[in-house]
Image (tube, rainbow, N blue to C red):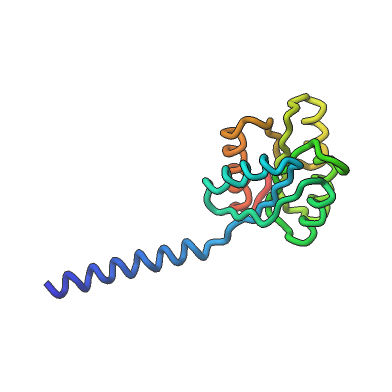
Length: 153
C-alpha cells in the first residue's frame, strides 16, 4: 500500500513539473490600437479567451501606437484604420519599420477593396472587418501559429 502512494506522489510531481514548464512558455506580446476605449476593452476580453498572449499596451491613435511599438516591441499589433492624427495604415507601416518581425492585424469598419489593398501594401499581415469576432479570433490564432513557428507566410 505504501508503494502505491509513492507512485501517486511521483505522478503528482510529474504533473506539477509539466504545469510549471507550460507556465514558463513564452507569451506573445500584443498591442491594441483603437481610438474607441470600449473597442479596446472588447478586444482585450476577446484575447483573454486565447492562450499564449499578453496585452502589453493600448493606444488610442497612431502616434501613441508608434511610441508604444518602439518602447514595448510587441510581437503582434491589432490596429484600427480610422483614428485621429496618424491613421492605422500609416501607423502599421511605422510599427513594422520599428519591429520587422511584428505581425499587424488591421481592423476596419470599412471592407472596401481599396482600404484592404492599402493596408496590405503597408505590410499588414491580415485585414479583418470590425464586428466579426470569430473571424478576428481565427486570424489571431493563425498569427500566433506563425509566431510559434517563427516563420512568416
